[in-house]
Image 1 (cartoon, each protein chain N blue to C red):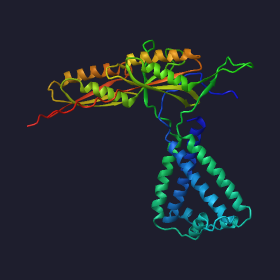
Image 2: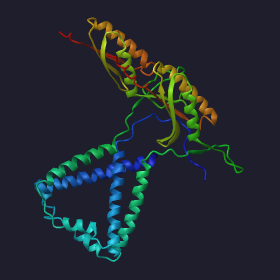
Image 3: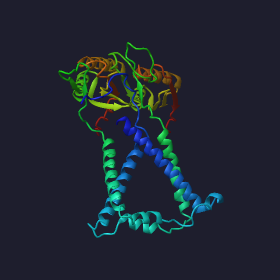
Image 4: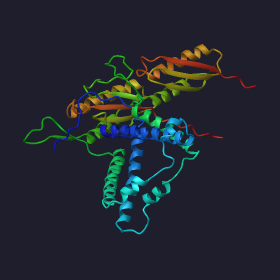
Length: 203
Length: 193
């Protein structure tokens, strides 16, 4: 049999698994539980085991039950969980990476379908979290920076640094330069916002 | 994970969500008795008579047993589909004809491409896997940069390896995606007191 794998065409951009993955795993576990109940019921019915049927015992307990006040809490929780599941079913996969353009390409860094150098094959990406780590280390390497926090999204890079330097503007410029150099060429088209907070001198 | 597994996940979320929304709303309305027009339509107590009557039919236990076995097999298949496995991914090349078939295993090419990239001075470690995503099968290489490497030089190395990987078979048949990862955190120097 000839394998019918679709290997031609552009490589899709990396994305996080869909939120509905947990619903699929949960459904499989529920199916396994239902299968266990059903097979146990059949085994008992066939006389191969003397124990009472679990499903029959559960049905007998439920039969004739009247509504209770605490059902409102359980019902409300089920309603909220159901709405969350419906949202997960429709949610698109989250893009987690930024495309790194190769030197021969243009400056599109916003993560479209990628066809790079090397024909249909080249597609180079970096995770947003990894880029934030690299930018954070670069910012912390700037003189007079006591601490730095970086957040990279597919739209912007936000850097927040703490400094003991009175010349906040010079620190801002140096951090901006260091961050841009570290993230080049991934963040070429992204705005880099640097917020400088002055640390109060200890008395 | 293949496309049909993702479709089943979304279908399970949709069905489970609908069941929970309607079941939860019914329990809520039943418990508080409001809105009255809906609450009055609900029975005063739960009844399982329909199920127990069906359970008394001679065919019931066997139908339940068969259904249970099928559900068990489906559950195992679904659970296994969610486990990432490093299995062979053979691809048949178009040069195949009636006289013979040319097949390549993408996994071996992924390993070779990762080793190639790991040999670059800007890359500390690389690992190759075969991914099936959105109906497309391709090689993915996760490469960790060395502390001094820049993204630009790593991207150039990754592009060159992708191009070389394409020439192993055919560009159109072996596509590569490279994920560049940040260098490992530098461990703090030992403190001397």
